[in-house]
Image (cartoon, rainbow over the protein chains, first blue to last red):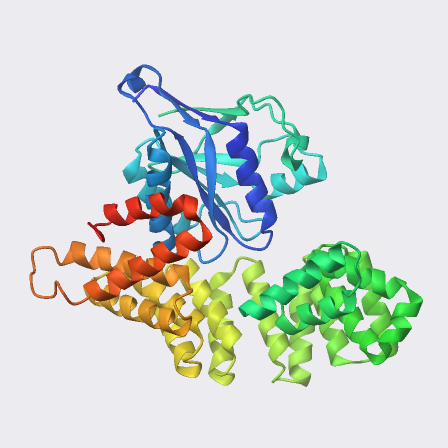
Length: 181
Length: 302
């Protein structure tokens, strides 16, 4: 496997997932990442675009029924536009917990079965806090990719802290994630 | 766990207080009674009350309860200087009080001084070994440090003595779910259902754990508990209605090819589908086609 897989995270998706995490500071949150489903021309341009995010829940993350329902509904709702689930985001309950827990891994595996290039974004709580205080400029997520959830390098992220608080800039891709598949 | 009526009252008070309409004391009392975690709002409005000498004197003896509430909220929001002031005021008023001692230990926790907090709690428990709140703080500390197995241990020991503490059972169940120890989580919910069989939340949570465990028997039991939740909530709980549909779909997947129990659950599932459709038509008519397509895909309607 020498091909490079790129992931592009759009501003909408990034803001949504950060705001979701900020809304529930004392619980774990998770959600789905959506993007246009690959066409046969995919092999030529292996970029996975994450165009949107759908928040899932902020309690009892390990339970199946709501996850299954959400996957069915998302497929139903967005399927007509050719958009499907391309990844999953997760934020841990504890401030200093920077590991992908077993429940999150299981969900990631589940999504990986649907979409083999799925990426899991784990929010970095420390960076999120810095972002809110206006100090940090780093992306608040780390990308993790199957099969071993190796961390992925985040390149050239042009995100500015103010965007978190609702000011919309011109829609431009906020980050690019580059790694070796 | 908040009932619908109280939730409505809380939301009304919250918006009233946030928009400067007064009623802060009522709001703070409600938050305290329902044991909710609204630290941001409590800190702001509580502090405003405390800093206003006239409002404070109107509270009379309740003033000290407010100090305690604001101290805890301040610690939650990491405004440790505010918390320190409140605790200082309280300890001047109630020197050598166990309750104030507990707040001081919580301050250690808030600062991340785990060893000191542990020592303080141990001391408090020596003086009063049946202090439930301190015991539970130890569990919380273990959880905050990431030592989940110690938290589970402490919680189990606590529940051996205080078996009637429903919140503790719920916390244990949620920890087990996060560790994916579903059988143990199911056990906790069973205890809760035995103790309070008319609370729909426990039946719902139990059904979800059973569904997650999977297997034909668990799915059939889950369906029954979802049905019971629907009965207890008068058909208004959307999650339970969906749960019945999911169970039926999963069961029919598993029993494909076995003809015997075909007709058994179909009445329940068609009733659930009907109820869901009615609910969506009333509350979210734009989403009705989404619902019908979903149900069709799950092979619940033709």
